[in-house]
Length: 255
Ligand code: GLN
Image (cartoon, rainbow, N blue to C red; front, side):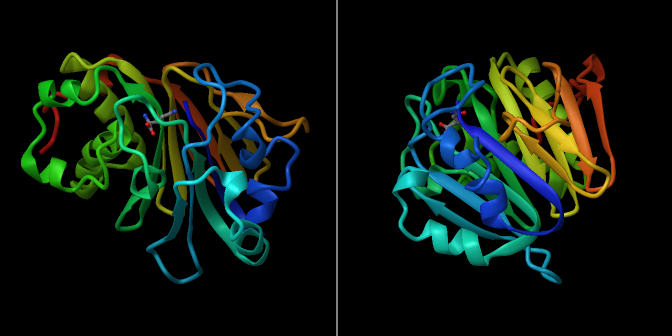
């Protein structure tokens, strides 16, 4: 399983989120503390962030472990942003390697990461009967890109981010899909995330919020999101609710 993180708040240097904290994503790449599946996250990493006045984020993704990228320290030192989503990857067997298979996946104003797996990938995807448009929009042959394509369809159809995440899990499960579906998505203004098979935490102080697979320090304020719950957050407020039967989509997988 991978580890991921999103931040909304006053502009902050990337390094204050990704490399400076004692248990940052950087360290979680080789020494995660709460990861339930897998031990290292060395199959690449990615960072997405937003610049003022531009709704479409930048992405920087690499196939090397986060500790093996000589360009990252400079980038993380001088780049500041008020909206960031980043991940370190432990590739699921049967999935593609390389930069294009590393989160964050993106489209329009959104950034997305998946911590988990679709069991039986890639055969399981066929059973979910996605349309050609969905499959053609995939960045790489990885279960997470497939799940992102399903979420993206819903976002493009106008669904709120939380609805799109919950509806995708509902539709995948209604179609017989099993796995672990910790999703994280942002549009630069809000975050939606699911705890569905692995750990999810958040820390909010009324001015900023961090949502992460696990706490990146031992300071107070971190709260765990219970399994099978949906978190939605802006910089100012956060809410958590259970995933319910009504999240099981009636229209099935959108294509
Ligand atoms: N299944 C995804 C991948 O292969 C995510 C893996 C994970 O959470 N470790 O990249």
